[in-house]
Length: 273
Image (cartoon, rainbow, N blue to C red; front, side, top):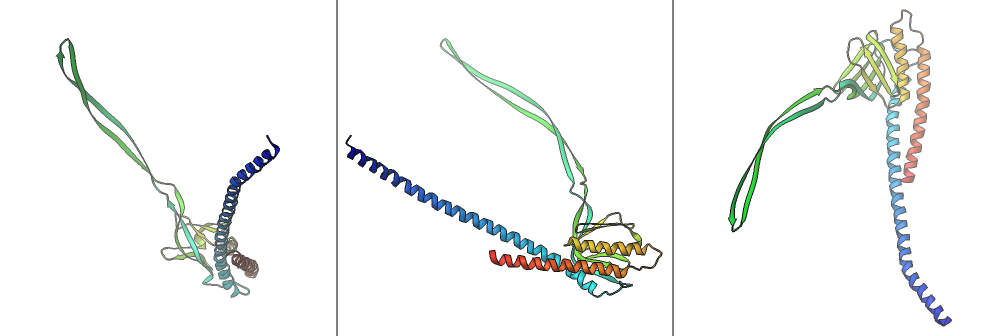
């Protein structure tokens, strides 16, 4: 083949293949750009959602820290001799309740089947032709039984309300239920993270109060320890000043940290939203 012709054919083939490749390449680039844009939108929306959730949690914690700070700001050297020491709003009351019951059913089938055959026939010359059909019916009974078992007891949220720590007792006041126990009837109390579990002599069921802040629950636990132990002691209460100082300083540090964190989260949300 003439070299010039061969060169021309090569140039033509490259042009044709290039013409097919370029649209495909352009489409792929457009798809990649669109896909990246969609991924970026999704990640941004998830980040905004997460940040808003964190802001909501911080604001809820601040409600409890602010309440504790306001009540203890009134105290100087000693706790009051009567009435409330601190009230924490927007807490949740949980109580031991029976869980959902479980029902299981079992059964047996007893049946009897009867069948019969009916046929007719004729003869066409030396060949016999016949038609037969069968039919039957089944009759039976089903025996079944059900057993319902009570569910296991579990802590169930039953109300929202206010936690009240008084000089001689701890109480919950809600829109539907209230709970209270004086320190002389208090069996045990336990603080776990943001929850305070109460067991008393005058109730078969324990009740639990959930707060929005671990550190506020811990402070309430320290106050409860001090008051309950003092109530069961024959000596005069003498550690008020130390308790007030510890609770005040710890809570105010936490309060400032939460406020600073809230400001950072709000500013970050403005930048990404």
